[in-house]
Image (cartoon, rainbow over all chains, first blue to last red; front, top):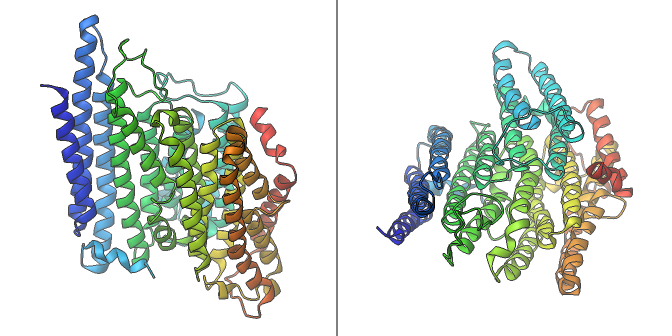
Amino acid sequence: MPIQYYIILSLALFCIGIVGVLVRRNVIIVFMCIELMLNAVNLLLVAFSKMHHAIAVVNDKASAAGTDAQLFVFFIMVVAAAEVSVGLAIIVMMYRNTHSVDVNFLNRLKN
Amino acid sequence: MNAIIISALLGVVMMFSSILIQNRYAIRNIAVVGLLILLLGNLLNTYTVYSFDIDTHNMLRFDKFGLFFNSIAIAATLLYVILSGSDIVKVGNYPAEYFALIFFSLCGITILSSYNTLLMLFLGVEIMSIPLYILTGSDKKNLKSNEASLKYFLMGAFSTGIMLMGIALLYGASGNFNLEYNHAASNGNAYNYGILAPLGLLMIFISMAFKVSAAPFHFWTPDVYDGAPSVFTSFMATIVKAAGFIAFIKLFGIRIADLGPSSIIILPAIIIATLLVGNITAVFQQSVKRMLAYSSIAQAGFMLFALYGNNDLSAEGILLYATAYSIATIGIFAILIKMKDYTFDGYNGLAKKQPILAATNTVFLLSLAGIPLTAGFFAKYYMLASALKTYGHGALWLVIVAVLFAAVSVYYYFRVIQAMYFKEGEAETSEISSNFKAILVVLAALIILIGINPSLLLTWFYF
């Protein structure tokens, strides 16, 4: 499959994520949209990794080009997991104090 | 390498010390000793050969600039912990954890000053930021702190997503994650994916602008800095912000031209927007803490000049700026934490009750405003000079705009001085030890010394 399909799919997922972060009011859903953004990046990285590998293999059968992007994907997963644990803790802390997970709560600070 | 390894280990040590040691002030003292060890380790790495030698496959590169910035950041953290340590332990029930998180954040900062691939940039930014989300929300019962923490977290994660998309697009264009754009390294093929590289760089640029709170991506800053416990705002607004700029400059010092012709317009536009928003909004604030948040945006506008100038003078300048700004802001926040009332009126008559606090606070504020004979003057001078050195008279208009905004900033900094010296009132402070005053005097002396002779600091850069 041409690489353009993957680029368009990932950019579409990424844009859904961005729009979700900007318009949804429920913190949990905002959070899911951020995860969607990160996973769109993962998909794109893997696609690019295969593309660069396929190009390199033509000249050199033993080429390892493109593997670094697949490694990057693992790092993104690990960091996303760390971020989720902190983020959910913050949401739980907020829920304990306000009994709501609505982002509109965030406007209280603006005097 | 020393600083990265030692700071990560010290973070773990601090975590375990909370099990064994109950005395809060003992924990602070352990943190001070830890920071001294960290500083020593980094100095050994900079000036001698005593350093961990680990093959990082060229993912990290330790140059003089990054190592020297590490020393500045660690020394500033040391001053911060000595000055405000007794307030850090009062924030919550688990003081050791706060110090552990500060050490982890420092670990991220030391990665950011030495990264050589985009993977390390990403990891450094995350290691630096994630502990800060927790520190911001450390006052768990306080709604403002909760809100600030959630807002900071959502903004941070969002900007990380944008940065990752940028990195992925850059990878698509070049086939590797190296800092320098290198067609030859990518299988010998010069790919031509036209828009991928500029678009990717633009996305990384936007996410870094989020991190250093440059307008128009600054909107989270005042709320987060206002809502977080004041001691941690002090850390976020100084050392972390400076580290963000170092990462920004390391990447775009090399790659800014790859943004395409638009880079000539983007940077001046962002500089002016940042100066405008920061300075003008700061004028209308009633709370000193919130004023300092906006002033930190305004100072970011000046630090962006280092990116605009992009020469050896701006490298010296950003180090000087990081030092001057960090020391002054840490001092101002340390005094702010001791005040009962955070509004301008809360400072009324401070000079009569606490003459030393008022005098040192004046020095810090003058330094932030950039009055000659303080460190802030030379910091601003280097920034503007670097822009003029690169662009000649073409940048003159931008320099004039910046100087005008610096004049605006004098207004809100002098409001605090006016309140302290010329207004009648009973400024209430919590108890102030003589040690605290002594360290404040040392900080003020440092600012004046660097202000008289900036080469005192910069000779170490070339040592």
